[in-house]
Amino acid sequence: MATLQAIKYSRGKLLVLDQLRLPHEHHYDEVSTAEEAFDCIRSMRVRGAPAIAIVAALAHAVELHNGSCTATTPEDTIAYIESRLDFLKESRPTAVDLSNAIALLKLAARAAKLEGLAHPEAKEAILNSYIEAAENILAKDLENNTSIGSFGAAWLQQQFDASPDRRISVLTHCNTGSLATSGHGTALGIIRTLHARGLLRHAYCTETRPYNQGSRLTSFELVFEGIPATLVTDSMAGALFAQHRERMNIGAVIVGADRVVRNGDTANKIGTYALAVLARHHGIKFVVAAPTTSIDLDTETGAGIKIEERKPEELTQISGAVVNADGSIDPSRTARVAIADQRIAVWNPAFDVTPHALIDAIVTERGTVVKGADGRFDFSQVLPERW
Ligand code: MRU
Image (cartoon, rainbow, N blue to C red; front, side, top):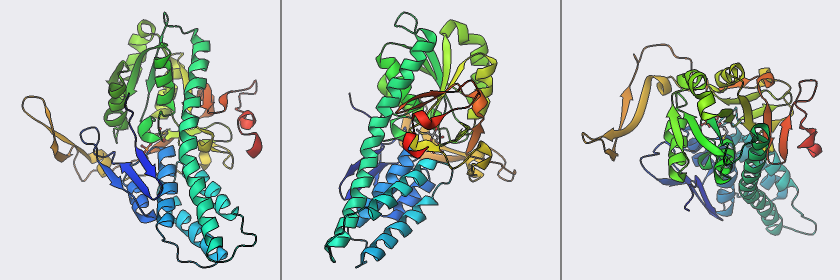
């Protein structure tokens, strides 16, 4: 089956699917410089914690491959690489995948073996070391997501004794699928795996106001893959749980993460926290799916997470394709429409923090972490070398 691909890469060329045009139009932008990547990330043509990191890493690999670095000494080559990465780091602050990728890429550039090499071979060795590390981030992300899918599905199957005769339904928020990653996805990856194993009854996805990643992107992915799914607005989750939990066997809310800190507090798309409160009230498991690249052990609690605030127009305006009188969609005619008084003051945090107390499990590519008797998550089982 064809799969959705947000990022297409071959050495020297990076194409990024413009997610602002989805689901009506599939258009790839060529991203060849750090400036283009910065703009692509900031404008949310690419979004989702892993995808942001991958695009930043690869865009710099492309510009290096194309000769952007004019340095002639190893020190200047490394200084150039680091300054470009520092610039990219400012594109979006909340998702830690980008800073983790940047730290890893800086180490890779410095790890190049330079013994006995002079210019230009020494510079080439540094550039190659960087490019290979960036390409590895792309390859590793796909592997990680497949593992997250398996670990998450296995954990849920255990909790509910789920079987093809007793399948569970789940709700997800925002978009954590192929479009937010290199493929398969994290929270949506678990849903894909549940479906592939015959364990999924139904997936519910929230609209995810104000940016509508759920209605524009997740519902598109679910329909694309033929997964039985229903779209609800964020404000319908409580009624959904109250009225349909038993009949539909709604077992879990599964979300992604932009940053999981040392105590397990998790920053994710705005609205996640409210869903966690509702899930707890209704006895529904609350599961975070995140690669270990989304874990930030340098921050102790959620209070230390910087939350990105975005522009008012995301609430006061909406864009979409024009619907013809016969109900068909004309993707060539898109419109931006005002949906509020444009003078109203707006608060628009892009993310919120769900306290670890409300989270039942954090699924990573190295296993599922649950709280110990002390009520704390212990990430040493999945992050031994960084602990
Ligand atoms: O603002 P976005 O669309 O980048 O927010 C994305 C999310 O909050 C995702 O849930 C998170 O990044 C995980 S994506 C695998």
